[in-house]
Length: 118
Image: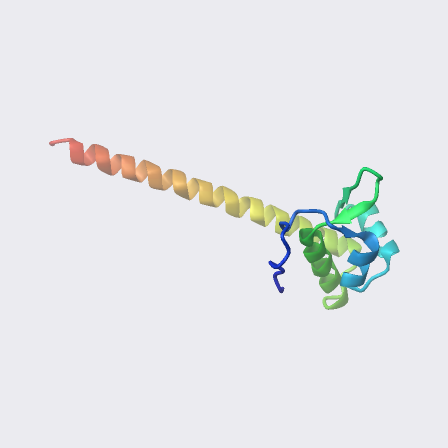
């Protein structure tokens, strides 16, 4: 996917109203409302309760559209894939943490062994 780094806000900054987001994804605004009802994403809301989509939301919507259009998944399939991807990301994070802990323990063990004259 193309990254949009020209804007002065971050990927999580809500900045697109629903009509603009729908045009960017090439779907109808009602489709985005339906995705929200189905729990596929949760856009931010303005003080006036207007849906605001971030760049991250737009990327997620593009991913959803790709899964449906190119792979032929229905919404239930998309939900399963997205849940699996989220779980995989969590597991990868846990593995990174465990690897860091292991590295720390190994370096502590080496320090203790070099300090021990026996």
